Length: 304
Length: 179
View 1 (cartoon, rainbow over the protein chains, first blue to last red):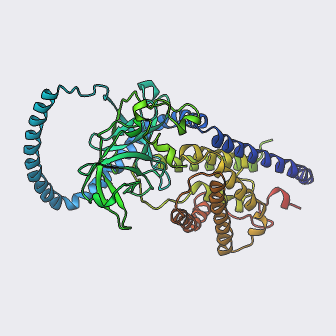
View 2: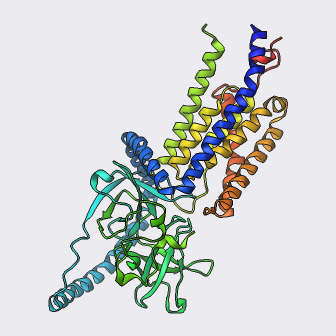
View 3: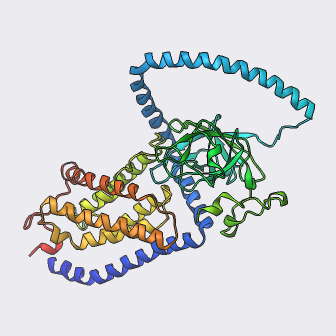
């Protein structure tokens, strides 16, 4: 028997080598296909994730909540300091609330004077964060809402306060949000008091830098950063964060959204977004109106 | 024919798949490790490398490729590229398994470290050639360092917990070693 095995092994080795070669070729072909026809393979990826991840959701959510409970239990040690800090914050907030109320009244008055109608198209769908495939290399989260709920690629996701990212990859029951910190994320922003336009380009760090700033001297740390809606990709006016000066001397953005606790995300419906159907439309979106023709075509155009 | 060796082997395949599944599951949890952290080691690849150097027959190439490809899909890597590179690394180590079986752990560590280094370099070169965005070099170096640090623990765990050790010559030998 031993000799039989030996003989069959001699015979098997070249066959095995050929099979390994075929396997390598097949994998490489998938990679090439992805490189040539990205959107199609990405749709396949979304479909596969859609099949796999929601079937884990019964386990994903409790385990994640449990680990969060452990984390917040650790923070009980600092509860006194937190309480003091919260009281101080609350006092400040009361002052702000007063100011906000006055401004709201003034705003309402002005709006009626101008007969402005607020865009009713910006409604939202709320989804639960299912999984977080965030590694230091890729920053994204999976939501439990997908094409079943009418989600479309390119819509903006916020955590109720600040912008979190945009939808990229929609399955039937799940969709992926590329966070603003991901190195593939580029969104056009406006810096508030000075009105400067810039591109917020993620670089996998917690504080994404501002690129293509026209006059950096006009921007100071502490300025508000909101999305500008240039190129028709994002709804304008969503709060993104505040400008800070990074340790490397670049102007970066401290994001308002709490990236440590992404539990529920609001996806803003925005039907003006151009759909990505093939590789060509990655470069030039078709739905840009004629008024926007002189604007940069799309945030994706810059990163290749 | 109920071959106990075949059964043990199939059990190990199942164990490998289960462990890789558990690793992926933990990595998918929304615990917000998020940005700026240190990239964790690739447990599934280290496990496969440690096992294939001890029992060359307990990690079939197809199984390994399927596991890594699933990782490519789930964790947003370019699909297929890292699987190709990892599979080449695995097959290289498999062909050196007999040579490595007599070496002390330190040399085995150096061998695996070299393979991991070449894999990382190859990945970066491929990303450059295909005009894809590369992660920062510091991240890749940190990742490699974490993999290197984790390897002895993987070896220890596979020895003590899962009983994957080197074959003793003349003991319960592999098919080819029997007289």
